[in-house]
Length: 525
Image 1 (tube, rainbow, N blue to C red):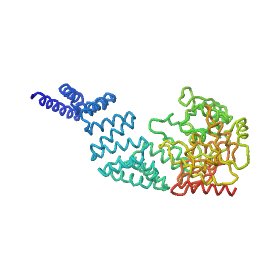
Image 2: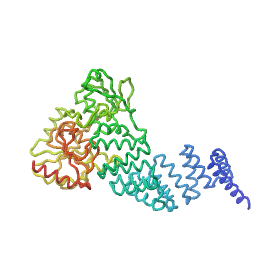
Image 3: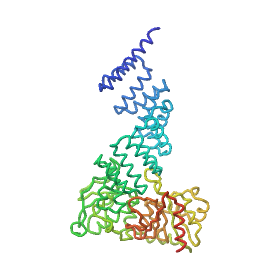
Image 4: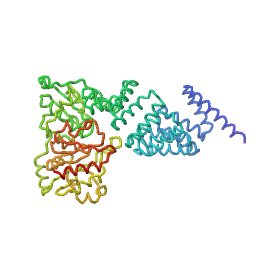
């Protein structure tokens, strides 16, 4: 009758000794003590949970999960086990399961600020930004000193476009930790989004004073410099634009001097795609320039783009974007070509068109689009990933002012558009061709031919804008009040595309008001 309590006490003593040894850095001694505790009491939930913690620390996530789940089956009210289980799942990118585990831990320990922080992180990664912000605020109410939580709150609010609140969150993080370079970087980003460019530059400079090698601060300052027209400094910072570990090729020291073309003749140059399709189209002009100057250019990029890009007529070779093998004089990311070519605001090479629609496809779509009226193509959505600035996309209902125009035909250029996302008054005016074009393996072949038959393209900031610009077709781009760097600050034209006009929302990003302005200008035409 007295054996069980004695065994339980012995197991508890061994677990306590193991925890102390582990905390003191005597890892093997700690493991041995926990193993001994579990030999005495195999169903000892706290020992199972601590064994899971040790396994996770040693990189054995699957084994750790088994221990946590056994522990929780015995003691479902163990908040620590739920939290640590969530940490394993979060590290394995099983985000919904991690969120559920963190939520259980928070319900059991609503006063644990750290638990709420991780719950918020899982929600953020799932794209549930409003919920993440609410949870971060709850954590900060419990412990205002949590600088990283204030930073995370700022990040969530910034993604939501709540820039003034985000600014306050970053200032909170800086107040909690005066040397927090990432918080100064976040402050710089939201200051830029608010149009406070001087404050943004000061914040980026402070971040770099604290952390000189911060790629986040270098790249964001570089983008701001580009936006303000300082290309000499901006391209240098722009070289740090990739997330840590995702750089496709090393920073190149290559410099191409077109005033000495003999240097380029026969020079083997590998150009590697590094961003989205819009960037590919925008910067492909440089690959064309190099090829026409005599360089032996190889483009490593998505196969679906080869057919469109080859319409430039420039002689070059093609390969998949992950194939970097071979002996080359220069290997560069395509978005690094402006830097290598020494581009300044007044020297942007903008001879358009430099891409061309295929004549037989132009003829085909001319027949399909036959009829009277000004033909306007519409595109309102780009990448919907919340990390890729979905706020560049335009709510379809904002296009309703165009539906009221007479002698105008609205052509749907939005691939993947669903009938239910369009207001009835707009869908009734829209000519939907999207089920019939670009059905093959090549991107933009039919789109380019349709655009060649249109009088105007009206689009958000997405690859459609770059395509129309590269084709030399009239294109109006609807931009947020503070746009991305490549559209500069306050300009109504683009130095990259002579056929392009830029329309900027007023402060607050009222898309309907912007489209009303566009509709009025079309009416006058």
